Amino acid sequence: MANDDQFKKVISHAKEYGYVFQSSEIYDGLSAVYDYAQNGAELKKNIRDYWWKAMVQMNDNIVGIDAAIFMHPTTWKASGHVDAFNDPLIDNKDSKKRYRADVLVEDYCAKIENKIEKEVKKAEKRFGEAFNKEEFISTNGRVLGYQEKIDTILKRLGQSLEKEDLADVKALIEELEIADPLTGSRNWTDVKQFNLMFGTKLGASADSAMDLYLRPETAQGIFVNFLNVQKTGRMKIPFGIAQTGKAFRNEIVARQFIFRMREFEQMEMQFFIKPGTQKEWFNHWKETRLKWHLSLGMGQDNYRFHDHEKLAHYADAATDIEFKFPFGFKELEGIHSRTDFDLKQHEEFSGKKLQYFDHEDNANYTPYVLETSIGLDRMFLAVFSNALEDETLDDGSVRTVLKLPAVLAPTKAAVLPLVKKDGLPEIAKTIIDDLKWDFNVAYDEKDAVGRRYRRQDANGTPFCITVDHDTLEDNTVTIRHRDTMEQQRVKIEDLRDIIKKEVDVKEWLQKM
Ligand code: ATP
Image (spheres, rainbow, N blue to C red):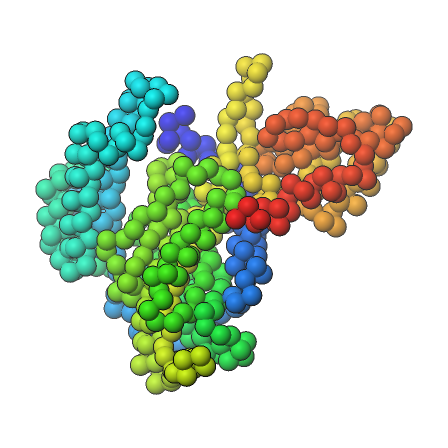
């Protein structure tokens, strides 16, 4: 399936099966704002729990907090967001459409990258089993030429953004002859900066109201609480503070469904370390976070690191974990070595000391910080889009199946009486009453059982449990596995253990 078609299918499936709705749809929606529906809310909660357990529950030196969305406005002066949280924008004079200048250039490079992928596929076909991808990429003249072009462009973009040389960003767009993706026009304005924070007011009267911002990241709620947590939790460096919560950005080019939203949720962890150890911890968290992703079994080839050329004002190293979304490899998670920038800034703006006394060294210092920051909505999109498949079966028919990792699936099992009589619905309901203490389970009695299986496949439910007339005799049921469609006859009393083995967080996290 072409990538565009696959992405459209993801969006419509998310709506049809109660995962994601456009916000205020009856009023024609609000751009780049989405609501999570009955199944979506469960999937999102399960992803959040999977992250929280891996971070907080499994690490005795990481604790979690839940800071407010509103913060004292000076926070955002100190963090640099008032002065530097900008995107470089460019308008097309003919179409009147606005774009992020850096994204236009990156999309141009993505097209060259597609050419590399095509060369690889062609060679793969030609050489068959003997094909060595890595060797091909590092020796083929055409591929090397493409890669060099990408590297040169991205290096120049990075340097120009770093120096805030916006004229050169425009020059680059012109030299590459980048056109408006919608209209093909190359009639561009100059590039200018645009602040991404949403402003609001606190207080009733116009005179005394205080200007506030909706937080654009959750991280600052952690930094301002660093000393409170360290002291009350008697935390010793190295230690981490984790948090999940909403963040808001007035994204100009908000598109690609829940990939880039104006209101979204982050899962962040700030790890406080001794200055000088940041390189070692950067590598540690890079590796640990990738392992967390891989534990979900969504395919090693769907991930890659992208080390940053252009570093944010607070960082001395940064990398993205990119995921292969239906529209290509894009950032899913950021890992940043933030130095002591944030704590030092807050010390300066608040006049309060935010230091740590290291008993081993008998010295005070401002800790360095290693951050891992992942968008919950982007993770949702990664999981959901990767799971959706149109699978051709042996008999030539096609089934739509949502192969969500069982640990994350909103409903773990559906219980289906074969017919709506003879006492079968009553037994099905007893099974549900028992299983619901441990799992989300659903009841479905409408339509032929084959259709009900298909409905649960498309819904992502890992197990279907069918109650039939034999159940009346011997207390056994059929359990059907979503991915293999294999069916087993099992005792009702064994159901809990069978399901638990497949959906238990412990079983999954142990793969890390
Ligand atoms: P991008 O380059 O895509 O704008 P970013 O580098 O600004 O992202 P960070 O500030 O590092 O992102 O935020 C950390 C994570 O938060 C990102 O990796 C992403 O998963 C998520 N995120 C950021 N902006 C959005 C958004 N507008 N909608 C959804 N998720 C987002």
